[in-house]
Length: 233
Image (cartoon, rainbow, N blue to C red; front, side, top):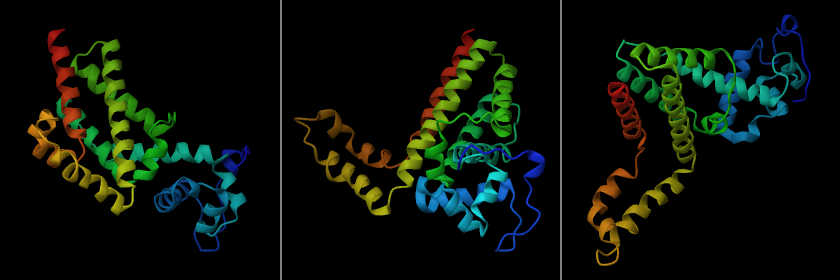
């Protein structure tokens, strides 16, 4: 897509596409998400999107100025899917743990899109809602403003980083995933104690643990450290 701007009032398409649907930002984002999961980053082309929507590719400019604008909308939609399902309870540790796990699950539901969007700052509605909500949870727990921002920053970056890491792993072909899992059994579990005593001593735990994500454990460590800092202050 190129840098063309259509005034918001003129964006809505009044006639159905060739497939009998009326274009909207929501439909375009949903279709783009599906194509990314099927074809990767190359799916974000105006030609491929137009073909999938049964629409003239130029009609997409009524909603998005270029593909990066669409990518930001996709990133914001992934945030929105988490925020729409999360409900706070008033227990700040439990609430942030639940939110973090939902963010991670959302990334695994759309692994390729999560990898592409994990480092983006959208400035859009759902991201703004998430920033406001998380800071509100932390300030409500009693964190001073500067500390609330530090914990917020660490919490969000951790969730996004694990989402991208585990998303990239989930997007690998199944044979490649299984081959990497086998390395722990075929290589690490067989290293001799006389040359690698620490690996040999923990081999059975490595084989069991390294095949799954460490995000819940990392999240618990982060929240425990944050709670300890709050109590200490």
